[in-house]
Image 1 (cartoon, helix red, strand yellow):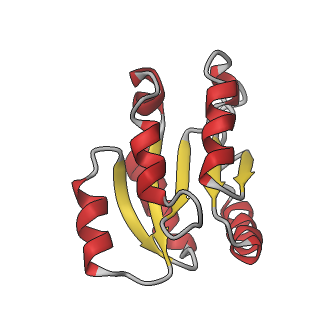
Image 2 (tube, rainbow, N blue to C red):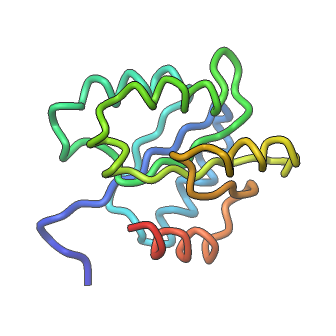
Length: 136
């Protein structure tokens, strides 16, 4: 049974509107999170995090981050993310999403201290559940 005093939030960052809808639906069906924060760019996600730094109840517990996005890709997002206070990183786990499991992307994701796993699109509900159980 969910803890009524704690709301769990996931931030979904993807420039593809179809992927955002599909992944939001999958996340909703898993009932792993109470709230989904949808961002259609890395920039809008960084802006949301910056705006809510002083309201921890609005910050995500988990981020699902697309790798391939225009303007700022997932790895560039991580470079900017590391400039946030350590409290955010300690509170929030990040999994990267990719439609192709490129060996270079896998190695880069594994080498990043903020990334717990690289997941293949579309999200697999069971794989997501296992990941959340490990890192929440």
